[in-house]
Length: 138
Image (cartoon, rainbow, N blue to C red; front, side, top):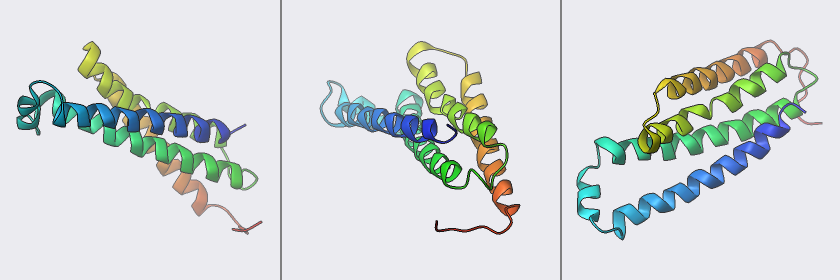
């Protein structure tokens, strides 16, 4: 079902990136060497980890929203499956940032995820412009 997976995976992803926020708080306030972590606010792993946290939650929320809209307007929108998969693929961006930080992976996943999410959002907007006789409340 187009949209349902976006909502479910969006909430799960949001929960994971919220939990990751607790790790960032630990590094900032409680970890040994916290001063070094705080002083590297705008560079290196500290900066990248904040990017992953913020984009992970943003992209999770976008999946929840896109999923809801796909379910609600499934009879009026075209290409819902493609939009759904692109939005889910967008999660490669924040996961790719984490992969770079902790596994030394290539930034290709960050770029692919960013392109996928951007494409899904633009496609969704374009699709809504072309709906005729829309009923907002059923």
